Amino acid sequence: DTGVSQNPRHKITKRGQNVTFRCDPISEHNRLYWYRQTLGQGPEFLTYFQNEAQLEKSRLLSDRFSAERPKGSFSTLEIQRTEQGDSAMYLCASSFGGGRNTNEKLFFGSGTQLSVL
Amino acid sequence: AQTVTQSQPEMSVQEAETVTLSCTYDTSESDYYLFWYKQPPSRQMILVIRQEAYKQQNATENRFSVNFQKAAKSFSLKISDSQLGDAAMYFCGGSQGNLIFGKGTKLSVKP
Image (cartoon, rainbow over all chains, first blue to last red; front, side):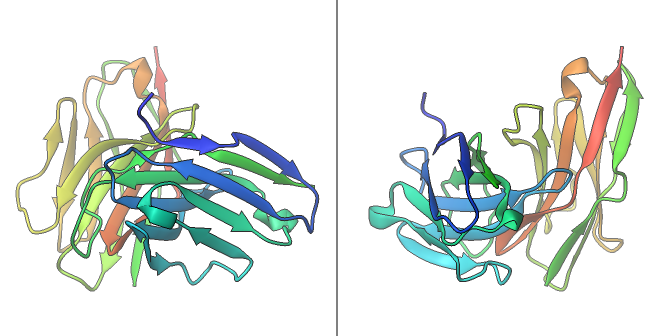
């Protein structure tokens, strides 16, 4: 399988705990995106990387969220001190692109479903 | 700032018929891209069609086509000869920098 891989598929945690998600993009893709989606809503942009550089981060993203992409390959998204409002599907996407705008096709993973109790 | 608005939470179409999903994209920029993505129950987003704002010609991909009216900020998706497999959530997206999405339209296809 050469698609975008996300792990784990599901995560249940207690409020206040830290969680970390992993995304493995398609190998030749230089861009990697994180989105959050709640039921009945569209994916909400969180952040994106071009290679190892984090180029943009949503103003809606609290400082409890941090993302990394060491060496420009896989990426991790960590949520510290989770809250019930963090419960959502976290989607990762990758692409091969350049330029200021996202103009290329994004390939999405199946997501990580987070439930905060 | 950029905003994407989808005003139809749900739509329904008879199999083999045509349906149009609406979207408006508001931005102050002239250089941007527009997308329609499909999300089936598996929740994996799949690109349906893409439009470059500077191109006057509307994009088409087999049974899928768009009607892009730049001045009106309108970007609608037409699905012709609807099939049962077209049933899904459809998200309109705009890219001025990163890609943002609207709230989606749930499309049902009746046999």
